[in-house]
Amino acid sequence: MSGSYQVFARKYRPRTFDDVLGQDHVVQTLRNAIQQDRLAHAYLFVGPRGTGKTSTARILAKALNGPGGPKVDFDPDDPICVEIAEGNNLNVLEIDGASNNGVEQVRELRETVKFAPTGGKFRIFYIDEVHMLTTAAFNALLKTLEEPPPHVKFIFATTEPQKILPTILSRCQRFDLRRIPATVIARHLLHIAEKESIALSESAAFAIAKGADGGMRDAQSMLDQLVAFRGNAIEEADVLEIFGFNSAEAIAELAGRLLDGETAPLLESVHAQSEAGKDLSKLLSDLITHFRHVLVCKVDPENGAEEVSRELREIIDRQAAVIDVERLLHLIDGLAETDARMKWAPNKKLHLEIGLIRAVQSLAETTLDDVISLIDEAAGGAPPPSSPRRTATPERSAPPSPAKSSTPRAKEATVPAAGESRAIAEPRPAPAAPPVAPVQTPAAPVAEAPPSPSKPSAPPPAGDLSGQALWEAATTELIADRPLIETWLRAATFLDHSDALFTIGFHVEQGLYRDSILRHREHIQDVLSRLGGRKIELRVELSPDIAFERIDLDEPGEEDANQSGAAPETGATDAGDALPADAAPATASAPAPEPEDDFHQDPLIQQALADFEATVLKPGTA
Image (cartoon, rainbow, N blue to C red; front, side):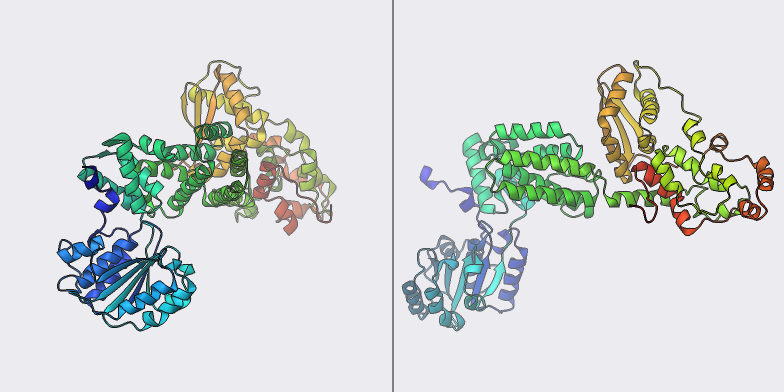
C-alpha cells in the first residue's frame, strides 16, 4: 500500500504544454517551432529549481518522438509518451551531468550519437545540471554539438548558466524559465487540494506559495508535508508553525506600527518574534518586501494586485495612502542597509532594533522638499491680499498697506524672537525717513495684541470634556502654549473619540502637517488627558475623504490692523502732511519695495521662517 503512493510533485507533474504553468513565453516559442518545422538541434533550459526545466524537456521530447510527431497536440497516454515520461524510452536518453561529467562519458556519448533511432524520428539526449561538466568534457562535446547528425537533438538544463562555456552557449537556443508567481502556485495548490479532498484555506495556500519562492515542486512538497502533519484540514497557522514562516498579517501590522511612529509597540513586536524563534533576517526581508508592495501600489495601483491575497491588498492600499513615494524610497533604503549589516552581525536583534528606530525617526524628519512643498502649497491656495505678488496690491491708496503686508503676518504666524525681528527688518532701505520707522517695526503693539479676537485669554479648566468640545478646548490651550504649531492644529479635523483613543486627521496631501503634529504628540496627549479627565492616546490619520482646507493666516481683521500699529485711513492725510515735502509722495503712492526688501517681506517667506524657527541674515553677516 505504501509503495504505491506518489508524492504530489510527481503525481501532478505537467504532461503536456497546456499543463506548464507560469512559463508561457517558453511554451509559445516551442509550440511555434514545432508547428513551423523550425526545430533547433540544441536547446538550453535555464531557471531556478522547481520551475519546470525537466518537465518541459520531457514534454518537448514527447512532441518530437510521439506517434505522428513532431506535433504539438500529442496524446500523453500513448505508450511511447508514457515511456518518455518515466525515462524508459530508448530514443530519449537522460543523463545526470553531476555524476557523468568527465571526458570519458562525453566520448561515449559521441559514439552513441552515430546510431539511428529505433521506432522514433529523433534520438534525444537530455543532460541535466549540464554546468557540472568539466572543461575537457565541454570541449569534447563542442564539435558534435555544433554539427550533430540530423536525427539527434540535444536538450540541456541548468540552474547556473554562468558556469557553462560561452562556446557551448552560442550553439544552443536558450530559454530562461522564470520563478512562478505566487498567485499561480496558490491556485494550483488549491486545485490539487480539491482533487485530493483536502480543506486548504486560501491564506494557507498563499503562505505556502510565498515560502516556495517561485518553485512549484517545492510548494507541492510542502503541501505533502502539511497533509502528513495536520491531515486534510490545513490553515495558515499550520503553515507558519511547521515551516517557521512569518505571517503576512504580522508583517503588515509591523509595517503599520512603523508608519504610525509607534516605536515601543514596534520593538515589542520584534521581541515577540525573536522569542518565538523566528529568523530576524527573514523578518526584515519580509518587511522590505511588504514595503515594496506598498511602493508598487503607490506608483502603479493596477500592477502587483495578484501578488498578494485580497485581505493583504486592502491593508497595503491603506498604508500607501499615508506615505509619499520619496519617504517610502528612503525608508526602504534604510531597511536595506540594516539588512546588509545584519548578515555579518552576531547580534542581529540589536541591529534590527536600531534600524527600525532610525526608520521611525526618518519618517518624522522634515526635508527640503517638505519645505518647498509647503511653500508651493501655500502659493497654490488663495493668495493673501497683502502679498506683494498680487497685482491688486499696488492699487491700494491707503498708506498703511506696507505695514499690513508684514506686521499681521508676523503676529498671526507666531511672533518671532527679538533677534528674528531685527534680522527681517534690517534689510529695509536705509534712506527711509525717521517718522516712518515706527510704522515699519511696531514690535510692542504686536506683542501685546492677542493672536486672534476669537481666542479666549486663558485656557479652559480641566474637566470631563470629550469629542469636538475637547478638541476645541485643547486646540486653544495648545496654541497659547506652543504658537508655532497653530497652523497644523487648525488644519486638523476631529474624527473620533472612543474611550482612551482620540483620533484626528488630515487630507492625504497634508502629510507634512501630520508629521509636524506627531513631533508634539506627547504634549498634546497630556493636554487632552487633563482636559478630558482621563488618560487619552492621540492617533493621527491621513485620508482622502477629509476635506482639504488651506489655512490662511494673512487676512487680519480691522481690529488686528489697528492694534498692529497701522495708522487709520482717516489720519492718512495728516501723516502725509507731517512728512517732509520730498517724502510725502513716496508714502502716499506706496511704491513696491526694492527687490531685496520684496524677498524678506514676502508673507510666504515670513510664514516659512516662523514655522521652521529660521532667521534670514543680512547679506555680509556671519
